[in-house]
Each structure stands twice: as structure tokens, then as C-alpha cells.
Image (cartoon, rainbow, N blue to C red):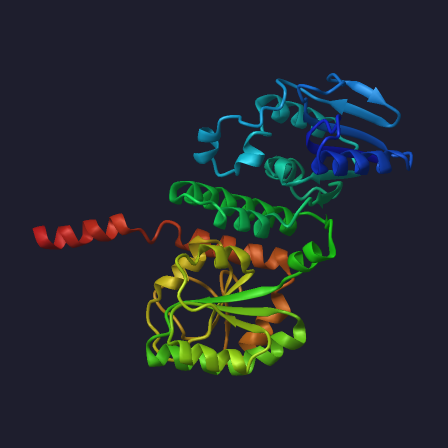
Length: 368
């Protein structure tokens, strides 16, 4: 077996848990007789040089040594979190391309979220080719929950906001890795449970009676279906506490947050967005929120209007609450299908909805 192993940096010397784990895994795979080529950054105190060879292992450590502080300002402007931004150097990208071109790999290992930057070029290189190697993500933590905890623990407002922004980037990159590789390893049973969460989300305000009726009717039908299927339903938005308390007392698989300062975190955690509204139809801005946050939408027929989404192509529509709940559960593990839905929905809406054009239309009417 030939394995391309992508990691943050040479694990030697192994003076922290990350390097102990990476080094130990590389050693254990090499001990099976498999041939491994490791691509990572060189560390200032590393004993190896670029091209070094051990038994069954070749080390590619190009460019400048790892700089833990590499351009934090640059990472703020990048879609990548800092942990991956500092690893995506020009030399790393160049050597990755050379190794992919050489080919012959049976497996490619993404050793930690630090090398999540390499997912896009690897997927682009192989496309739909039948000879694509198996892709494995070795997680060191459930990064989304860990980074969220770190962000909340920051004492100053500005630092907390900066860390929250980076945490959201980590969550998105980790989600891409989990969704697009063939196999994911978890370091603890607790992390495994977090990765296995299958969650649908409803975002909105439930202060209006029609909204409360819609939510209550759907939850009564969907909660036992979700509980039986091992999935979770999260309703995010404001409502009277007495109303939410009543729902919490009679559901098993549903969670009701009440008012939250930011819904982005909850949408990032969800696989499917649900629009179960039988009453109060018309245009719904939250459908666009789902679409532009790249979450596939599952909805009741007639629950929204004015959005160019087509059943089976860019949205999934159902005649009643039970079929909607079962449709969500049937599709929640079909990542390829969910990705197709959200990509088609985004493409359909991308150039048709923006505030600037609406402002110009209003001004043109005033000026006419």
C-alpha cells in the first residue's frame, strides 16, 4: 500500500499531544510495511531535512520552517482558519501538486484540520476519476465544539469576536472534511458521538401565533420520528418561555434555544434546514438565509413563494408534516445528495437576490 500523509509539520521532536499522535500513527502505519510519503512543514528544532528517509517513510518538508504566528492578519481576510492558513504555504501547495501528479496512491490521509486546505486541490485533481484513492480524515479533536468553547472563554469583547470568527471558519472546514472524505477517525468516544450527530434546524421567530402553530404541529409529528431514527431537531428563535417549556417537557429529540445572539453557529451545525410552515406563507427571507449559508432546504409544499427552487433539483417538498419529517430522516445521511441540493439552490439564487438591486429599483421609481 502507498499512502500520501498530509500533516501540519514534522512530528519530531514529539513535545505535545498533536505531534505524539501524528508521529505514533505514522509509525504504526509504516510498521505494517506500507510505504508512506509525509508532506508537512519543517520545524525549527526538527532533526530531519527535506527528502529524509526512514524505513518505509519519506519526509517532504519544503520551504521555510513552521511559523506558529504566520500572518494572523492574513488569516483574518482568508476563508481558512489560522490553523490551516499557516500551513498552506506556496511550497506546500507546489509539492502537493507534484505528489498528486506522480500518482499511484492507495490512500491520502488528512492528519488534522490544519491540512484541511488541501482538500479542495485533492478533490479538484481527481474529480470523478475511478482511480481516486481513499480519503481519510484523522481528527485530533471535535474542532467545532472545542473552538466554540475557546471563543466563549475569551475575556475581552474584540478578542472574543475574532476568535469566534476563526472558530466559524474551523467549523466550516471541519464540516467539509467530514462530508467529503471516505473515512473519519475520532480520538475519543465522545468526539465520535459529536461527529455522528444528525441534525435538522428550524430558524425563525415564534412570537406570532401562526409561527407557534406551525412549529408545534410539526414537532408533535416529527419528534418521535427523529427520536426513533437517532436524529435531532433544533428550533432556533425567540418565543415565550412558557411555550418553549411546554415543548421541552413533551419532546425527546428536539431542542429549543429561545432567543440567541447569532444563528450562524446553529446553521453551521445542521445538515438540513426545515420549513414546516402550513400557515403564513409568502416570501420568506429565512429561505434565502438557508440557501446562502449553503444548507439544503426541505419544506412543505406551498410554505414559501418567490424563490426559484425546484423540487428534486434544488429543494425537497412534501405534502404534509409526516412525509416531511420522514423525508428529512431518509436523506440526512446522503451527503452527496444534500450537497447537490444546496449547490443547485445557491446557483439558482446567487444572481437574483441582492439588496443593492432593490435599492436601485426603489430610487428609479422615485426618480421617474
